[in-house]
Image (cartoon, rainbow, N blue to C red; front, side, top):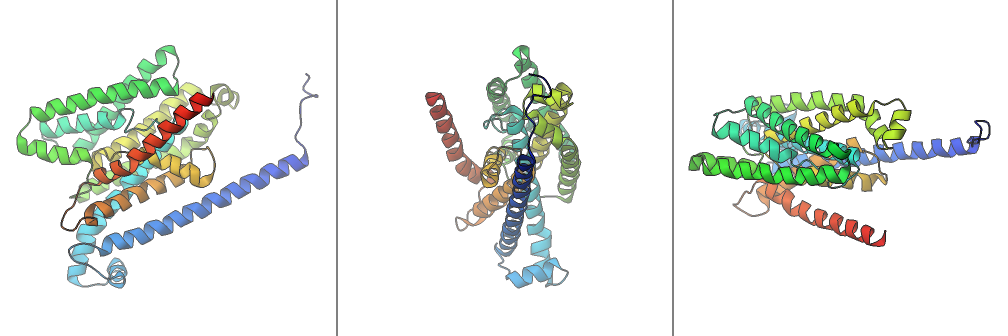
Length: 353
């Protein structure tokens, strides 16, 4: 078939495509706006509840510079830092999960399943227990552990060509190795240090320092800006390596850069709050279902992740009177059924193939 004989889209075809794209953008904006409103409402509730209950009007007054001294201490000194950390951690995990799942084309490709979070946790626990590090130094250690595991997965998976399923299986194996290393370190440490490390390993938004908030915010802003720059290449890579190459994308460098950004997002979140399980795993599927598409859905995934962590932390603090549990326990309860549903759907699709 010659070039002249190839199909040329008609004006009506182009018009329908333009209308569909416009409708998709409008739907994305509407869903993002709804999620932002839900987050704002949830944030007000989180700032209201606690040992000292604050009325909604007093919460808003305090946030805008008013309020009593007691309200300012409770809200600005204790609850706002915890809320901000939850929002940032949720957004980072949501973005990391969306990038990994889009890049590998596998719904199980989440940093908390393929060993990225476990690698960050192992490095962070080692830094805390044996090097005596804290704060920003632990964040760097977690980032290094996540990068190391991601590099090992990539090298091992690339021997016969990187495939989503192979990447995931190798990551799961390395996750078990990292978990074994964590358990070994815990058995060799002081009991009190091990207790604090165990709380961190479950995933907690407990005591938050200004240094931790600042380092998390800086890391998140840098990585989000980097992701915004490469997100067009991520969409092209979803079309397949050959199609992406035809569109001018250098596939290997693009995959490497995007993977490094996703690893960084997971590492920053893990260093700040511990490996809060299943947030990265569930955020992207929920976002894609809301949007009705198969794209990366980065913004909506970040909002869903922030909503999941903030809501889970609210439940963890107030579901049982007089008992506060780490947020990772609640996200685990929420995420485990989603994993089972995805596995069941995968088995059904294989059976009908």
